[in-house]
Amino acid sequence: MGGHLFQFAVLLGVLGLAAVVSISLRLPVVPLYIAAGVVLGGVLEYDEVVHFLGSLGVVFLLFSLGLEFSQSSVSRAPKRFLTAGSIDFAFNFPVGIFVGLALGWSWVEAFCLAGVLYMSSSAVVSKCIVDFGRAARPETETILSIMVFEDLVIAFYLALLNALVVGGAELSATGVGFLLLKAALFVLLLILLARRFQAPFERLISHRSEEAFTLVLFAFILLVASSAIAAGLSEAVGAFLAGLVIGSTQLKERAAHTLRPFQTLFAALFFVSFGMGLELRSMLDVLAPALLLVLIGFIAKVLGGFFAGRASGHPPYQAAVIGLSLVPKGEFSILIAALAGSVASPESNLAALTAVYVFALSIIGPIGMREADRIWSFIVPAEAETKS
Image (cartoon, rainbow, N blue to C red):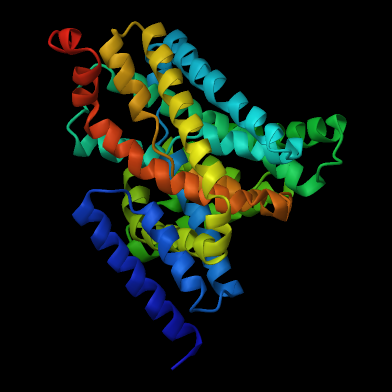
């Protein structure tokens, strides 16, 4: 047996098994998908079909992020939102720049590493909040506010990263500024059109037939994503903007329900295709620096979250929970590493380093969230008794 049908049968079977294992162990499924890809990379042929379907996973991941983006955290307490988000950014993004330059990388590679270290996994964090019964706790709103801030930053970050990928390391500051201006005009035009023609747009895309609605929705997402590429943005940013547009209409819940199975499938294929592009030997070669990076990333996220929590008025215990809750890494760190593949030198092993880093923190992070009470009780027994 051979061919694409057999290959996808094996791929989907292994991914389904990974999902079952993740549920049994109460762990995020992303690192298991990557691990499955590394194993399957030595067995199955990595071809353009897998790569293309994986790229659709990127589009649907970012569309879902834009769809779920909420302005409530910003509008209710804009000052606290900006303060907490800025502190989290200041503690984490520059660390990636410094570490990358210390490793002897180019500034473009260091910029990529900064994004990997900065972004928490909103999917993992949100799921853990629900699974661990923390939705009603007072620090949760601040955690979600920081997640929203990171989501906004990643949209601009991806635009700049795409400019660097297209223009390369030789791109001048003027060239970067021009590309960003063109991207900003595209974003502004899309938002203005969405607001001006919201009612006609809803009537156009909405249809009682689920089949017609699904096809028109797919066409809209892919059209905006491809238009973003022409404007100097990546398809990921275009998909995020498409999600923002749909999320501002009455079709938000219907779109989320319609796309959920497709997002699950294509996102899984993206992570496994990323893993198939890695070699186990390359991951073992970067194990020592990756573990050091795990330690640095863990400390930076916890400290950044702690001080962001304190600046938002939380007592020390709640601030510590915020810091531990921001540790999990996942889909966006892998996305950044994948986009940076064309500008990262083989010597940097950025993809392998990111894979080990994400694998470790996507496991350590949820455990830290789940055991936050015990960890704080161990560190400060007296104060843990009066925590709120």
